[in-house]
Length: 638
Ligand code: BES
Ligand code: ZN
Image (tube, rainbow, N blue to C red; front, side, top):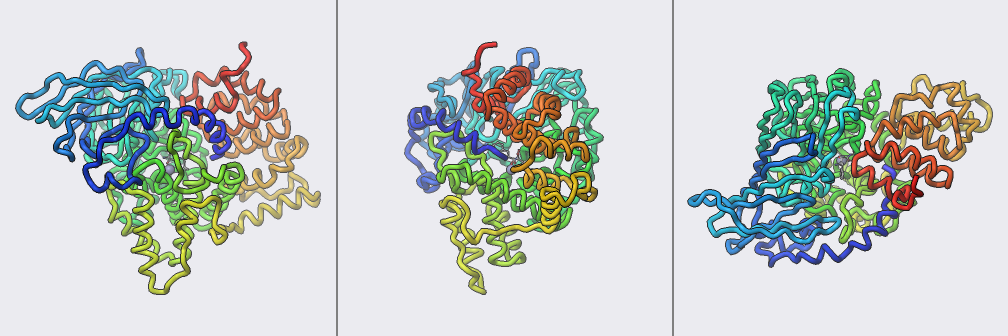
């Protein structure tokens, strides 16, 4: 991802919000010892989960595409950790609350008082519900707004089939509160059930036990019996078909996409089996994928039992499925062992990126895994060039900021390098055993960076019989940049690519003679990024004549190519660029292109002309990023 530059632009905006909203809601006195651990305090939730903790959620919702609302109720069952607690505080954002009832074993439901606090731009508004002494549940009747940040309502024309509308949610990091009133903190886990009514013919699927054989009659009952944090609650509704990938894996997609998706993801069962061999049982029963329309703002989202994925990884040659390995890996790191707060996000993403590479190695071999590790380190180094020191640490300070700002390469690639460093220091066999034990030990719990460090010391480093060289954990976790002894993945395949590039650059070889026949996507990506500093329009034309890169159907290769085209002023790619930006809404692929365009006044004008047409089709998360890049609010009217 190339987000750091966005980060610096965001910063100015968030600075204003900083302390105002966050401090307004002081937490009540902590009742147990976990709450006294300042590391566990979640700055991004108003919930009083230390006093009253929600354990189960029961949704009953009507899905209306006409109004673009979800309307109905959320029933929250809770435990009182503090027996004196007289109220339950949950998070909301832009919800219209119609009423709140409390349920008591003797009295049944009765209306109760509630106060919806003032809304903060980042956090939304706390909803404080008064609890009668015997109450064990509350039921909130509410509806969402069309602009709910977790929801994207797509018109039929934004889908592959063009006939039916589509809805999907994206709850991570703190968007669940924009479609469900709940304790929206990764330190709180709930089981859930849902009754959903949709227009008939459309299918509703969730991060729950989906049944591909259920009649698409518009009335659905879904259950998730394993406790998960709120950011993993997910829903999609659309014209969906299903194709099995094996006994416990399958893929949902629009009918015209499902066959290509099933072919692309044919290795999913092998990935599950490989991960189980390494790290212990897959504990979520089924593993299905859902291919979303192209406006999905991320590559993938690890919603339990149902990974959400962008269609931009359907390359036709299975070359971009490390994303599936990544989202699958979250079934261990993230969904089973969860970051306690968004400061600890690297625990989710760094461990997952490490496991992703191990899965790729198991299923596709060392050559591919090492190419991807080198690409990962390269994007990290580029990111570190742009970031402030404070954002180069793993345990990042997000006080007063939107947690989505923490989504740089650092938690992913620096985190993965730390795990690789631990592996190199202690040996693969011991490290694998350690990680397996870590998942068993912390299964279905949320942990802080300090919990991780203590566990690593105790079960890996201090216990090392050979007394391995010390690991500077503090420098990795709270220091900027990369420690000098950080792993340096190397790829022979890329060495060969660099030799070819050098021969073309010094004129001993013509573009058309570069031997690319055996290149995979990864070699192309490395070639284009290594060549980028001196890709003139003429040199691009030579490559294009030989290899047809402007018409590449691979979204990652096309992205690199279009980026180079903008920088070089290579006009033959103009139409493709425009079409790409109109077709795809994945932030990682489009934001850097807008950013490159915005580097010149003429480029910005061009970007604005395209963006005017593309913006209505983008997800709010991508809109936010690109509005900031193009200074959308300062544009000339027209
Ligand atoms: N959990 C993340 C996506 C995410 C992170 C959404 C933070 C919202 C806030 C997911 O697992 C992820 O990392 N997706 C990556 C792809 C992956 C292969 C690196 C993405 O979408 O780019
Ligand atoms: Zn991830």
